[in-house]
Image (cartoon, rainbow, N blue to C red; front, top):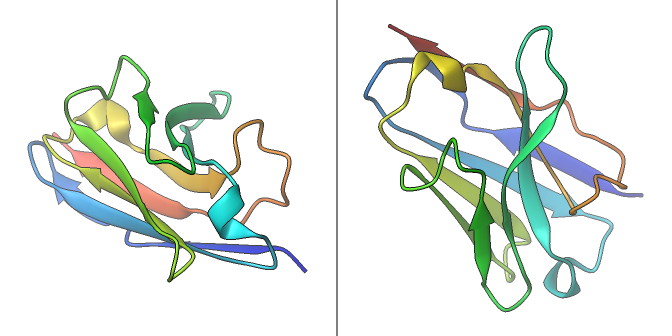
Length: 114
């Protein structure tokens, strides 16, 4: 059974940092690209960053230069380091494969106060 468990969110002031983690089970993690998504209130879920099995990364323009995605295949975990946070980064953050075809986890809430 596929399970994605996100953690590391919280309340932070603008300009601060957070590191999110997503532990995956029930999938062949090492052969899957992974992505971080977010959904702000009243908005559609969007992909903010993804990482291939080889470690190549892509980012949404809104987070480029501030967020860094990484992965640890041995731990079956993908990370999102978020720096210089802005109020518009406030959202629930989720991980999934690109396309979002796995069952979604509960996500982790990130709230940035201005």
